[in-house]
Length: 290
Image 1 (cartoon, one colour):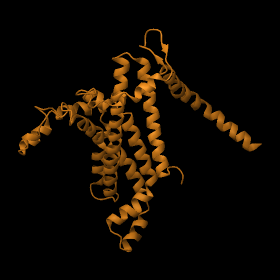
Image 2 (cartoon, one colour; image 1 turned 120 degrees about the vertical axis):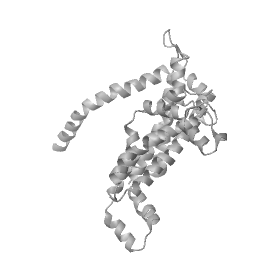
Image 3 (cartoon, one colour; image 1 turned 180 degrees about the horizontal axis):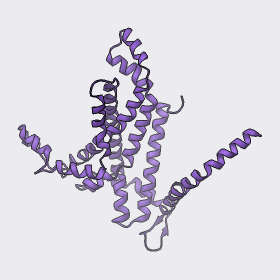
């Protein structure tokens, strides 16, 4: 009887949060799927077409190419955001001289807004006044200078470098906290047994913070899949469609082409695709089973 009363009290206290969650997530989610079943410009009378929008997405090269780009984005985010953050966190595992200063320096880009950072990098990438071309010219590599955001071969990777720089510090702080929770005695015992730095990193650090590392990877994947602001501010999907990602394509479809039904189908597909990728990763890594 007491246990039943306790469970009812838990449900009672969860009710406000559930109502808010339903209002701001479940209901909009359901509405998005509902509108994706229509052909609609957002103003006139919608025409029900079932799942025709989703069949169109399968053959839409702008969407499928965008999916390919965010998969590359996710891979690069894991490799550089999480990978570099892990290396930096491991270096600052011990309280060495200047470690607090470097921790602040690594985290500093995180506090800058994405809009301000995008504007700063846009100027740095400029063909005539940008610092990257100036450095290349100064060291005698004028042949490598270019309009980084205006070249279809480099624009996507130029944009991709910005979120990597922006959020390494975020993952660095998370991983550093995880590493500092590892008892120092474990490292000391391993060193006594003859372990070198690489062994300490691969046999102690990574296995013991693996749950934290998995969370960082999931966050990196999620951020890549819903990427919008960096592309929209710096290139708006151009030049041509070389930097178009699903989120910017969705925006253009709804607010430029006024295909509200098709745009919401894109939005719903982004969610399903992101969820699928995360679930596959969790399954492959047995996340949450230990």
